[in-house]
Every structure is written in C-alpha cells, then in structure tokens.
Amino acid sequence: MQVVAVVAQTSEPVRRYIEETGLPFNILVDETRDVLKAYDVWHAVGVFAWNIARPAAFVIDRTGAIRYSFIADRQEEFPSHEEILTALQHVST
Image (cartoon, rainbow, N blue to C red; front, side, top):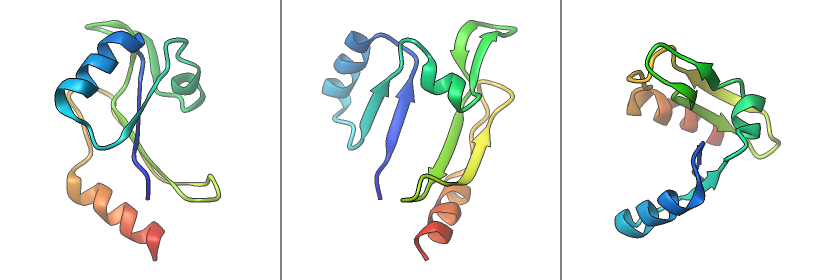
C-alpha cells in the first residue's frame, strides 16, 4: 500500500513542510492543477477562496481503479479515519 498526497501549491513551501514534519508519505506538487482537474476536485471559485482543491480522498487499487472516493463540498469536511480504513480493508482483501 502506498499513500500519496496531492497539493496545489508551489514546491518550496511543501518541501519546507516535509522537512519540518517528516511526513511518512510522498507528496505530488500539482502547480498546474492538472491532477486536481482530472479528479474533479479543483475549485476555481469558492465562497472563501479561489483556485483551491476541495478536500478529497481516493483509494485506488493496483489496476488504477478507484475503489473509494470522498470529495467534500466544504473546506472543513473530511472523511473519518474509520471510513478510510474500511475502504482500505476492502481493497486489500
């Protein structure tokens, strides 16, 4: 299993954050927002911000099929840890 985060930022602040926190997973920097647009999570204009990604989580199996997806309507909305763990268990069985 591999965890990858995708962020719509420039690489320098992301690099600093990784160095400061020691994140145990990879981060893909998507400055052009191509990946975010492909997964339909890019939000051009929102009530509180513009040009951002909606919080989202995907579980993708080894064949590239999306087995679970969560795309928030609001910036403060996230799936629960239990929901993600359940989705991962279904993929690995």
